[in-house]
Length: 109
Image (cartoon, rainbow, N blue to C red; front, side, top):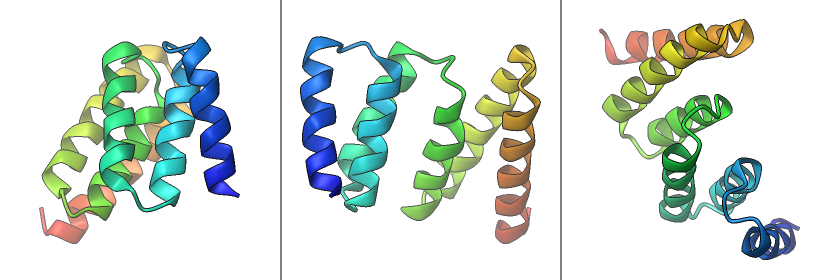
C-alpha cells in the first residue's frame, strides 16, 4: 500500500511543489519503505521551504536517531523546541522536550 500512496503523493507534488504537507507525507512514506536517504532528502527540502512546519522536527529527529545520527537528532530537537516556544505550540514542545531528554539519557548526557 505504501508504494501506491507514495506514487499518488509524488504525482500531487508535481502540481504543488511547495506544499509542506506533501513533502512531509512523502518523507514519511519513504521512511516506511526504509529508504532513509530519500526520506532525509524530503525532510531537508521541507526544512528549507517551510522551516515553520513544526511536525518536521520530531519526525526528522527520530529518523536521525534511527540511522544512528544522535548528535544531529539532538540538534534538530533543540531547533524544534525553540520554534515550538515561538509558536506557542505546547503539544509539540512537550513531544520535542521528551524526545530530546530521552535521547540525552540514552547517550549519558
